[in-house]
Length: 172
Image (tube, rainbow, N blue to C red; front, top):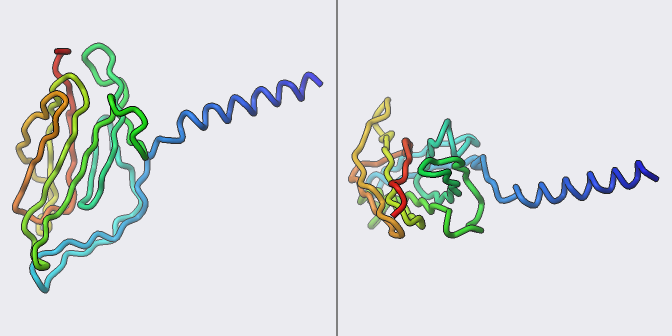
């Protein structure tokens, strides 16, 4: 009987832990990336399943993706930086969207939108991998003000962005 009670407690505990962590989404599914270049030319690549977060607080995002990052702060530092499948905690979840603007089947530009729900300004750095490049290129980005969204645009056909060195200003 003791074993049955112990087994029941362990089983219930494991369901509780699963329910708490089930919103985490570490891996993106494989995707077929297709980007317009001109009215008759496309860039196409098959992207294998990969992590959204690559290394400490490094987010890799592809055009067409919206990624939610749940952030836990300890004092003024980032304690946890995890991708989640949906926004369950709006006050601590960044919403990051990367899109290609296409008009009449022609590339018009790329746009990165970051929604910052925190009462602190958010800074980060970005690197891009463009269609015709063989290496990562740094690019400038502006901070995201507290409780606002920022929009960054580029004229290039960008295959992927790496967003790194995230930090928040001291509490306002």
